[in-house]
Length: 377
Image (cartoon, rainbow, N blue to C red; front, top):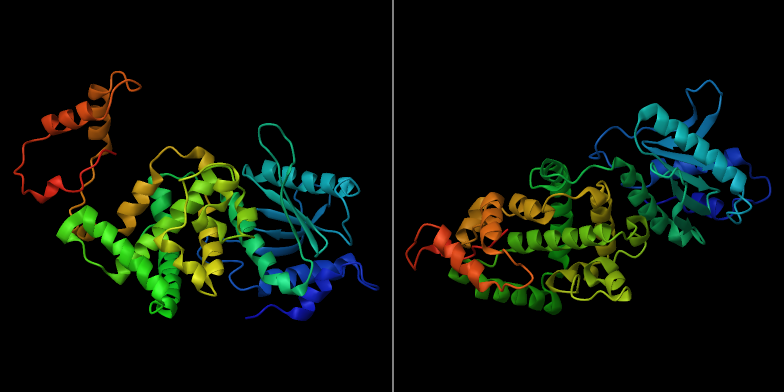
């Protein structure tokens, strides 16, 4: 369902004659309810939208709009943060109360419909910094506002990126994977006959064939899975580097191109490759924002596992990996080999480690396919 243009026009001019805070509050609630995919049904927990929710602290204070773990305070007109300091303190009080009551993290949004400021209360310092902002300068930017809100509403989940939570949210058996794969497949069918997209898939297949040998088969399904994995890995890379995903959602094309990394002087981490074909599809940026929303469910500062390995082994099934000769070393074995071989890691080269690798493993015939694709980690 397309966004209501009249609704967006009203939000662009919050201080128009005759408009009240109650009017703006009602319009914001209508936006949240009517925007497509803004409140996804597959997110963990029930995100119920509430209007004028009273805080259970005996003060009779009321939150204008509450959505899951996000508190939205509506004002008639916002100009500068200095002028709105009283409003910010009010919002901070609501967020802190919610955090105390639920023992979980909360975000706060201050908005007049046109200006949207996202704040988060830091647990360690008690600070209430501005994390991100959005300005609805015209009704044409309604879709961009929805994309910004999508990323914001996923932020409070703060799920630790452990193997089980990664599989539950992103793995091959998750509803998120099913939706993303279907979306990706529908986009690919539109550009499959495009010469540029065709060339990218050919180059992808040639690279894997040279690496994996005759066991590799060029399959559309595998190409799409690799596309999804590449985009998810790039989004995770941005998050781990501390790039705000709500800001990234305003420029989703930067995910596969690595624009933010190059601006920071970091090269060869995320670069345009075979999988940026999604940008050639009109809905490509919407798909990238959907990936951002899923990645943003996690607290990537708490990463303690090789999440990309978990993702890969979940999405690329064992039968496909076996056919391609891909066998991955168990973590415990890789750690044992490294511990024995690398006594001076800054001075030693990789060759002694390779020799020990063959010494530690049982001997195999030269033609044994299990020799192909073996790697440490």
